[in-house]
Length: 425
Image 1 (cartoon, helix red, strand yellow):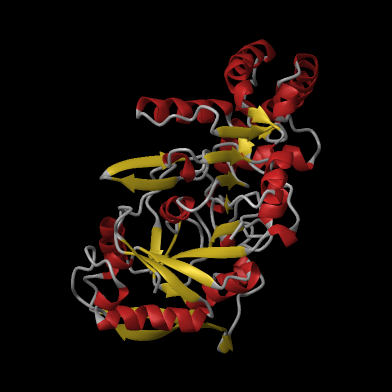
Image 2: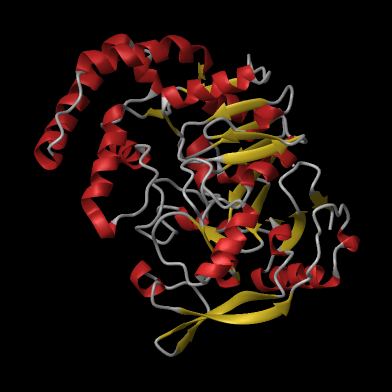
């Protein structure tokens, strides 16, 4: 299909990097539409691991065009470090990577505000990556942000940077007791970034729409997941952008009518990083077991992920929000050694059964999951290539997930490698 959007249907970290890499084979252009370098997409090729934070995973396929679209907030240093890391590993990005001139730029005062605000909250912290993503999006909404097009125009850049540093230094000093930033130092640093990054800057909105008019195959990738979406997630424990399928339209400058397919990614269990309600969270013993086998540590921060049973109520809501007809289930192999498995099929709140998500994080934190138990398969599945060869209990588990979430399971990942994937179920 010409235009496919791929989104996470849980709290992020669903293994989208691998599935994006897989779908990128049949795409001409891969577009990242929101988030910043708070994302971490991991792809394993021939036992070699690549972790990407801003550049779409499709860059690992020769000849594919990759775009960082207008909905992304860009830390220039992080982007250039990523480019250099790919170059050192023999990945040629010349004339293959394009960055929207409408992207908003992250500055040192953004990540410092992120850090200090989180520290000030104490026990009420959200659990951000402290990369400055939220403060940058806040400036965007407040109409005081600096875009890549501004960075490319020195006269405009000087004025906007001076205004922002003056304002942020007042806040940093009076609210947080931090001395602030030097205009001259930040200006010199970012001019250095500009000299390198300007070769990638372009009008990606026109570029994307022209490609769609030419019936080229585009894959739009989101970062994070549905329940970290600033509007539809477990607010306030969310990211600062729209990680749902609708975010692709705003984040790339395309009409909803241009999207032909929305594809979701879920784990065979559930994880989340940072604070916030998590009804199906494991006990400490099971948490440690699954976390270690699944290598559940953040690709961006290294923080251990919280792990829990598959929440079908949560994913069914994501299926509705994103209009998902099919999903990929990742990390099925992590459950190989569990004798019994649980799936959350409903919630209970103060003695009453709920079939949908609660309306607030406070209410969500008080619900009790209603579980259905299924037998595990108790064998190693990481070398299985065909769905028919999976253990019967594994097939039953996938079938039950599909039934409960109202979407087809069309891809199953049984390991981190490209080849450890079962398709065409």
